[in-house]
Image (tube, rainbow over the protein chains, first blue to last red):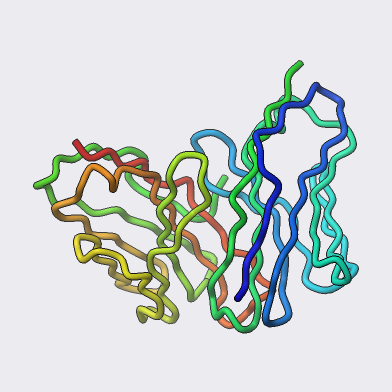
Length: 113
Length: 114
């Protein structure tokens, strides 16, 4: 079936450090991939997306590349800020899943000054 | 600012109460969703409405009753809830039959059952 495996947290980084959160997927159809971010007390916000192989999604300094050969969609940021502290969810949907999204378990990131 | 609006933001209710959660979107989306989210966990899908018809019910107990009065509104009626139902309830919307489109989430209703 369709699923997402996400790097376990929590992750604690110093400000300006490099961030990588790993995400791999299994899909029976042709997936679209997403990263969502959830700040404390809020809902999920779309951070970036990629809809076909080799696409790179980017937003707010975050990037992720859709790698079909490794079935991965790792999230990266070159220099994190305290304001990036949040929970990050990788997600996928495919033409076979109807309107369903499959979410990873989430990775909690804390950035310390 | 989120484009999906949920009310109330917080709700405390007893196990014998009846209450409703409301969700509204004006993005023209024809698919709407209810999720339940426990702390530090991913959202769990409860219900999906597509073109105002219930298309997915993920074996949710009957004490949760969804309703989609029109293409912009989604309600979740609550009755005789249990303490384990305390959670953040998220509403989302998207274009149905468009797998490349993201779901847009509201900020949720934080529900506490006494």
